[in-house]
Image (tube, rainbow, N blue to C red; front, side):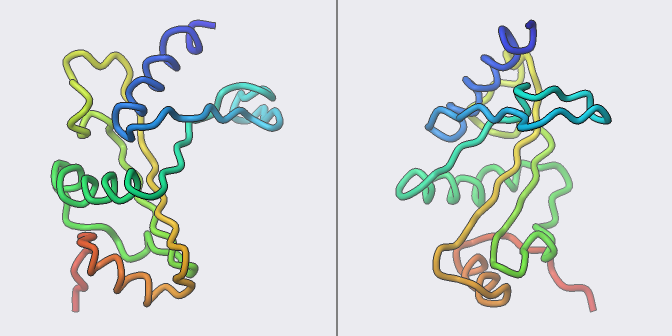
Length: 141
C-alpha cells in the first residue's frame, strides 16, 4: 500500500533521528470496524530507550523540545498517574530539532511515556521529575 511504502518509511526515519534508535512497528491485534482498522494493519511505532540514550533524550525533551512548543506553560499534573508514570503527548513532530519542517513530508504526533523503575507513588515521582527538570504547571490558588 501507499502508506507502508512511502509514509511509514518516512516516519521510521524521522523517529530514528529523534530517538537515536530504530522504532519497532506495532500492528493491530484485531480488527475494529469503528476505526476502520484491520487485523495486522500498522497502528503505530514504538521505541524503548534505556540507559544513556534514555537520559540523553529525557534531558533534550526538558531543555530543548518542550520549550519549543507554542504557548507552553508546563506539563499538567494529571499527566502523572498513580504508579508514577509520566505521559506527555506532543501533537506536532516538527518541534524536534532533528526534523527539518521544510523537508518533512508527513507530520505525526509523538507520545512519550516515562516509567520510573523504583518509584511506586505519584507524589514521590513528582518530586523526582521536578528535581530532574521537568517543567510542571504552577498550581493556581
